[in-house]
Length: 244
Image (cartoon, one colour):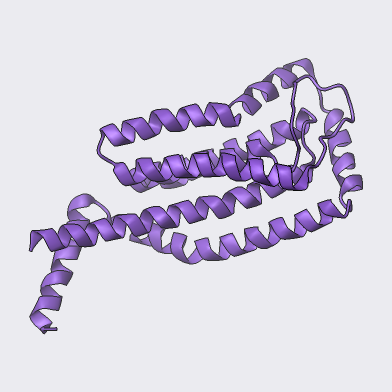
């Protein structure tokens, strides 16, 4: 391969990234690739560990103790706040949000982002459904709940799906508005944490349900982000080839 061809290609790639504003995102993307694999491995290990303890009924005491401690914090105002927070983590609500955002992305010709977001959403809901059926854990009944719930408890669908969807949306925003990426990430983390806390406060999930939901959701989120980046890199190479 001639040296001048390699240099020419390198200049094209650098110029393309600068024109698109992607050059500033290199530190962020590198951190995601390196840290993402480690985070996914740790999350998968954590989920397996919690699942094993749940199957052996080893978490019942600490789960109950945490929920009863939260019961002492209940007030009418906080009850209403937590119901609102838990609503924005409802999988059906998040599905609607995904459909709206994905449609807008398609209209804006961001096909890779739209497709990945749709896969992330449908995959998270489907995977959570399968896991719930697999473990078939009953929900806590420590007090009279103010919200109606059905189906199994482990892992938490609100925790899992909200982490995937809000995490994916924040990633898309952070890669577009990179100067505000830290603020976007901070708000997203607070929202996801609040959704998980609301499920515990309302007494509809055990703490280990929520933690396991976060762990499973993180693995799926990282897989989706990696897939999106591979798609984007292939498109970049194809665009460079078409220019020649």
